[in-house]
Amino acid sequence: MHRRAALITAIAVASALRGGSGPQTVRRIAVSEGVQPAEVDALINAARDCVGVSYASARIDNARRCAFFESLDDLEPLIEYWDEIGGAPLLMLADDQSWDDSCNVTARAAAAIDQFATQHALLKPLSTRPASAKHVVAENVAIDGSYVDHGGDRWFDTSRVAAVDGLVDDALSASLLKAMRARPGGVDKRSWRRGALRDIVDGESLSSAGACWGLSSARLKTLYASDAVLELQSRIVAYLEQLNDDVLVSALPEAALGDAVGPLAANAPVHGDEYGWHIDADPMLLPPGPFTDFFGRAPNRAPGCPRFVSALVYPVPDWQPDWGAPTEFLDPPTGETIAIEPRPGRVVFLDQDVSHRVCAPTDAAGSRPRYSLVLKLVLHAPGAVARFAPDPPDTVVGSARPCPDAVDAS
Image (cartoon, rainbow, N blue to C red; front, side, top):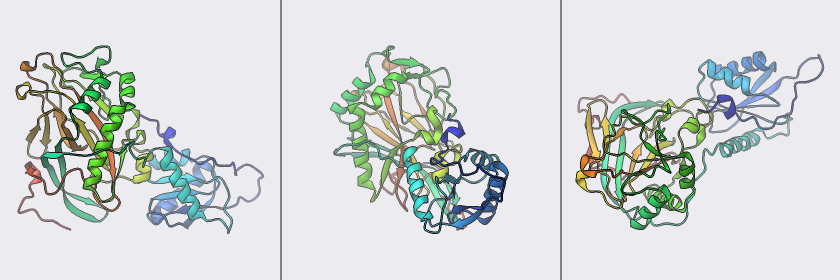
């Protein structure tokens, strides 16, 4: 995981605190409307106690919850203090000059915020090229429902899973398998390693009975830069753009979960493996860092907030039904499950907070691995919920069926 201090941006500030012992000039801290008065007081007191600077507050117009400090050369003590007291996510930035009456502080803050987002790849579009998105939605599932409260609103929320056929054709499957060094008869141990897949937040394997096969870090890096993955990304983005009026698709940035969970994973379950239930990520559970500083914390599928989505790709050219190896999805409140089969070229989109597990191939598969790729995506749809499947769903599982007696307290 990243060190918190390594993820703090202070925009090349000048040291304005050196000098004589005379009266100290009171500097300004510019805060957006989303920062509460008690939080402003806490920031002013922290600046005085932690870095020896006196501040007075001013307001700026910006949609981000942010605090912009005049002439401060070290934000780290303030960030650490804010984390220690459990402060709500807040984007803290520092300017490189003093502000006089002619200074447009709002514009300078906006520029600093844009630079922060660029530095941490928070709104960086996925690399693509023109591509078609011919497809058939074969499975469209709602699962794991509950009422959610956020930002003063309350709604009934369900996670979604969608199996989409046709996005990946035989030619792209072959290109992906070649880039993965994926042999149909057995795992190529020159590129695949037992225990190489560490694809969840705590860095553990997905396997509950020993380490699973994953690509070596060098091969995974080469794969991510390959023309095959670029084409895959292009088709996925084209599909998502068909479903949404306005959507930005980005790769999961390191700023969200550190370098332990990358934007691409590959696995190769074989007969005899056993795998446990897991989620890929939950934006409500992200550690403090640039992602939460910038976006705050919100439930997955909250309108106008980042939606964490995985795209699971089966590039296998042939897979017989009796070979098994579906991906199972769990509805925790009821224990109901649904399985989606690994058909050749299928792409399964899932919310990253959906509980799921890999199933190993059956004995009938012999030594054949069931190869798959997972692209970790973040979808941004201003003022809306980014979609990866049509509404309404075709299949509703467990708690995603609203109870007739449930009372919506909104």
